[in-house]
Length: 411
Image (tube, rainbow, N blue to C red; front, side, top):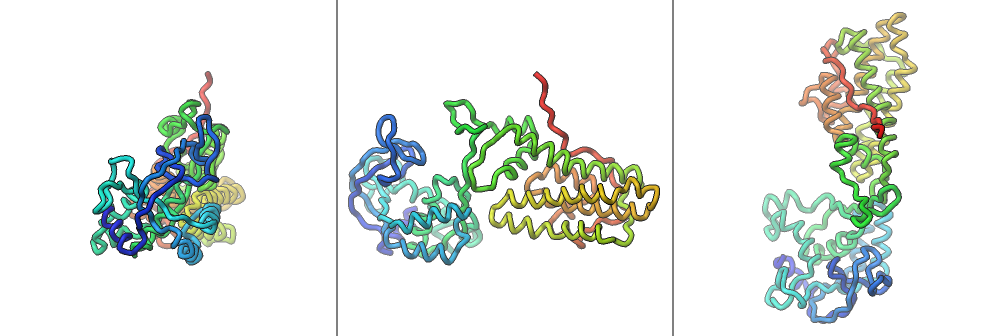
């Protein structure tokens, strides 16, 4: 921390002055007048509700005002630096509104990191806290293996209430010190519970362990990533979670896997059937399966988790429509060879779905891949497509349901 301070001081971006302004002890942050509102006992910060007090004291300042144009140029050159786009617009608007020099030390308390050569001053907590990103990677030894490996970070995932610190102050500190800037800041939103703000006083805090005990770990992960466009605020509703679990996981993916694997067990010798020539219907479904990885990867690369899972479920839906149209139960009597092709196409599609479900639902995906006879070495994304096609004749274990329906217990 003191090494970064020294770099900023030597660059001429830190100077000694005095500060007057509204300060929230709880947030360890200074606020402008337009960021405040009247509270029950005085002014409070609009974003956090923390009470503020007017303070005046000697302070070191960071020349943030000198970085306004350079920050805007940086944002223009790196349009994906701040996501989602609504947050980017918010930050750009804030910087265009004019930046004031930032107070980066305090003299009214003694806990914290002392300013080099002036121990009467304690460094501003956010300058101290943000520096942990690079000190954990080995700074100030910028030639160390860990620093070169981990910095600049690919992503800072932060709450929307601390976006400014990560998207304005932190890149300005880094550029002023001649250090690389992290590649992206993604600001996530907040959850409400059944339309109400979550708070201890209301007693409506959502216990994730209770959700896991009630609905299952993978089901909980799926819902939280699927329900709300990631980055937006979201409202947790129990009925919405049950609908996702039953309609998409149980009726969708669970039903697809169970009826396919059960049919194979009963009518294809409990092994991967030998496919014959593919017809356009088969080829269309396999093409969708083969194209799913780049779709999901593009979405995950922008932290659009809900978009990735929508693409995943679209393939689930397409596979269920395919089995209804292809009707292997009819082909069993009329055209067994065609039945085997349909079943192989379905198993291959389920293999893709299971491999690509691993980031969101690792346990369920592993159980599905076990039932497909896919070894642990063959579960990577590189095995998708032609590389890892299921081998005809490979025996399959007895099918087991992976996504049970959730049924409310009667009182």
